[in-house]
Image (cartoon, rainbow, N blue to C red; front, side):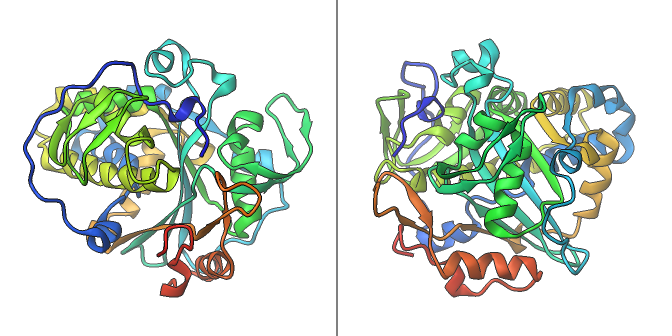
Length: 368
């Protein structure tokens, strides 16, 4: 698999680990409840931006950057859902890299940034549950013709690595690529950069994760034994980026860690009395908003809070996370391609706001 800058982990040196060796829950249950990456960032912002303490955060509007996806993509897009359901594209990147991400091993150069994590989050009509589809970063896709922010046109290209689209053309082209490959209309876009992610974890006071197996990643210096560990921001960043120390070293194993971590992050935030601690909640809100880019329609705390309130019925127990069904590419075993007919059936169910059949969740690359 690719060993570019986004997969190199954090600063050198072995992060200190904490905790004991409690047994991890077994595979299938973990996969279902695991990476509920779904709306984790959004729910953090809801706590920070809604209810009786909204006035504390109105000054944070300027932290949120917006991208006018609708203007960039024009009218040639898939139809909206036939229901009141919604589809979000959630990216993790180092797009506001600078010195912070350079120090963290993210490259430090915005022009070389990657979309390290990508999920299509589908919220069906009624908004009582959610499904998140993770797209492996090493998936080979057809990138459509796109227009860059400076107005120049980038021609379409075949067999392009999915995570390279962001660095080559920008976020609007990532949305367009996802829409072309899935025929699913993306209603909203959320992106969090990794330097901000680190600060958010530190502002919360760390996140406890139950490490599923010993991880010894020489590339990032991450060294954790199986069992529970409370990770600070730097350690957390290494955990969600590691690929060399887990499974077969591919991106497919890392997706599971990312989903597990974000569920733990959400649980940690929910367990804290943020409304009873304005100072701490403001600090968390500031970290979250500094790291966030959204589509123009969500680029304010008011819009995010209103959207978050509309998601109040989405219980974590009714969330499901799926990896896009993929198979190893026949020409390059270090890459994967969408597996058919499973991937097509999955996207079709989302387009119709219908229940995703179990057969559409099976990924040949993982034997699932």
